[in-house]
Image (cartoon, rainbow, N blue to C red; front, side, top):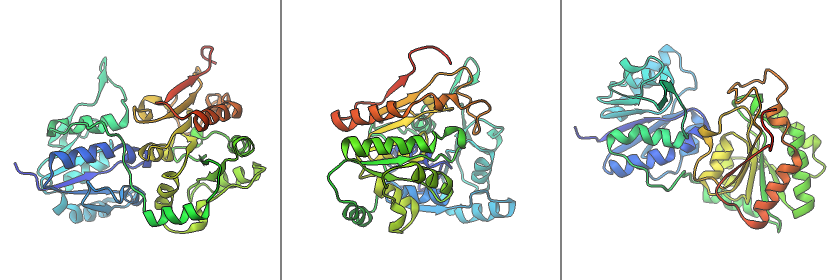
Length: 353
């Protein structure tokens, strides 16, 4: 069967969408003449804007109801004629692919979705249990039956040059440009305390004359205020330059010397632009998000209750509170002074706490 129209249903989370870019690139190499359309949440669509491997981007509602789902499927039907690739794990995503009437529907066989897919691929299992792998690898593995292969080039995003130039002019200076991403849409369990981010920003300002940029989303006003209130030195904020939030996020991160943040979307945006990271890892399993393309450090504490994968901590948040600001400062200074190696994981010397 010839493949001329391909629809890709993109992941919902920004970080996962960034990690899906090697898979999109592999689709283009395998089907150079096909029209590739990517559909996803508005933020995801904006994140992927500018990729040369994608012909069209289609925003869809975050949580479409039954009527909306049918309407979206009808709108996407021409783009899905030959093949629909379902990257999210949700039942809803597979149902949407089925409603488009795509001739071939490829996705992982999980969550009771087999009957909605023509090509239901088995997820990675160990001793009969589904075990996670790095998300970029998971998406590429899904495409292998199509003949797609990894080119080893890693994550890829594009930022608007005009916006990059405007921000660079506004923030011109001598010291390193360091971004801070204290939020996490997953939930509070992923968030290192705001006052600790402020302490790290103050230390880097005083030690290496860093220009510190605070990166928060529209739903993170409380986190933003808490960081700014605790910081002794002012921080730069890209929101004052207008434009779309995701476009600004890409433009800012693409120019950073270092990003410090939680295990959240900005981390993977940084990886896509080749920017080193210092990631403060909490309740999630590193295997999901730590890949071969990242440079810098992942700071993590092994605790008896983790990794719990829960959005809200049920105990005392020890997995993150046991990571001190001084350790983050030391790793950041090392990266800024000596350069970044492929990502290393830094663990507490002793066993579970």
